[in-house]
Amino acid sequence: MPWLDRFRRSGRTNRPARDAARTGSTRVRAADGADVTHLTDFVTSRTGVEGFVEPRTAVSDVTLLLVAHDGEWTRRRVPSVQWAHAFANKHRVPSYDAAVVGVPQRLRDYNRRKKANGL
Image 1 (spheres, rainbow, N blue to C red):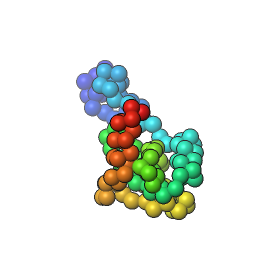
Image 2: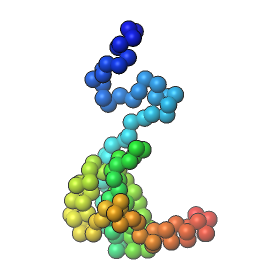
Image 3: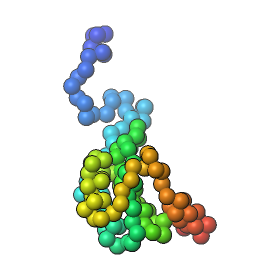
């Protein structure tokens, strides 16, 4: 390979790096129909659900965290921040930006209870 070719963009933007196995670099999995189905099932089968939209990070795409009244929660990837808020509005669930308001204390309490019970 000529020396200057190393610095040229190949135009292949969706492929992992050639040395992905060595560096641990991977592609982030996109949201799919199973994620949407899971979120819908969670919203319709629990009461007092609130949505917390988590922004894209270096290791994950945009996610929607749903928290029920007792602290039970689920998190799934979603296509975009706008999609997450629209999903919440469609299901009449209040939605917040998690980067601004954080996550509710009842979620942490729920996790603590589960850990104490050995679940």
